[in-house]
Length: 480
Ligand code: NAP
Image (cartoon, rainbow, N blue to C red):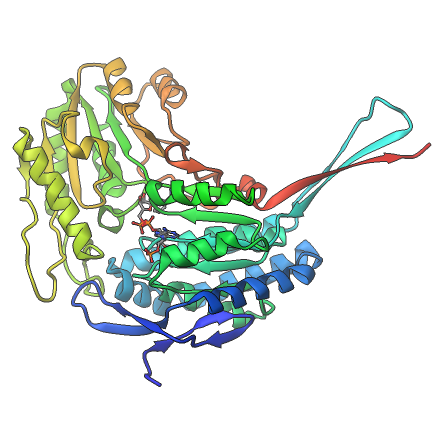
């Protein structure tokens, strides 16, 4: 067998399956692994293992489940360099960001290690003195987890942490482009003694088939999906048949609002973080910059040198800020959106439309800054998922808020203003699940991450993250 072979992980064992797909480095297309392409038999074995393991895992005290999650976090952190390098190879992102992702991903295990002990129920005062009304929280059951390529560790640990803390077991299907991070987590879970069947990983190049198989199984009681709105919608429909619980973390179209009284240097620093993390390939990436006319020149004057300082290159090379985009389709999409904006009158302040290149580094896309954006341009409606800053002028505060809400998405918004009343008006007026106020980074394990409108259902992280994996049971107890 090839030394590049990586198997599915089922019931505590490595399962080669009957077919494989290849994983390549997005920088130079080097072959990095040949991975089990899970067919129906492999997926069914994973579901069976998760269903069997659920019977005992759910009965383990929360403190014991939490202890194992804590050990998993410790192992991830101890191995952060190796895990970071693996992430650079399959995803392309800069090494410093890959290591930051490993830390962020481990923080979900740490957080939910604690939450495992805090799945509180309640006793409700009864109106009938002969009754006691007791509410407990139970795990929903074996869960299907489907995750994207942009944060191969964190999108998965955010789900696994909450699921295991609640007493659920999981079958995880990572993205075809980046299955190795999920398999590395399975390896560590095995090493710390998470029991067989509690975590199962079924990589695949046939996502639709695996998704359908998971959703068709009555043993799977919940789906947690992170990915595009289009696929999320299909999965939600498929889950309806069996009335499965569903959590969806979907696409975004984040506004980044800079009001006239903003601290411009803070806004520039926030813009660089909110836009260029993972090369712009993030659901919380600032997609539409909405800048009040009075401060636009100052914001652009600060922004252009900051953008010019960003270093593009192979993610593993020292000093690199932006690695390649993940695949050719991503480069083509950025090119289409930039070309469309320029054709419709956008002013180019920095960079050029990506060119079609070949050979190593062909997917490197240098930052682009565009002004005079209008709602007629496709990038006003679509996630860019690349290093493009698109600036539209707002006449005043009311215009900025109306522009910010001019989207069917509602994941996150950023607003920069020194005025406390304006901050509150934006927090209350923005149609999003999350708001960054004078801050370009909102993601943290302690806070509820999630969107409204077409950006999703449910929350991950925080104490609320456990809710999505538990169901309430109420007992009316007659005592006299
Ligand atoms: P995607 O195409 O929807 O894929 C996401 C996952 O779903 C992958 O594992 C994919 O497998 C799988 N998949 C695709 N089609 C499927 C189907 N018909 N049935 C079952 N599974 C299916 O999304 P993506 O392009 O990889 O990821 C980018 C999107 O994710 C963006 O829209 C981004 O905003 C969103 N995202 C949201 C959050 C959040 O927390 N809200 C976080 C990160 C990303 P394959 O890879 O094998 O196709």
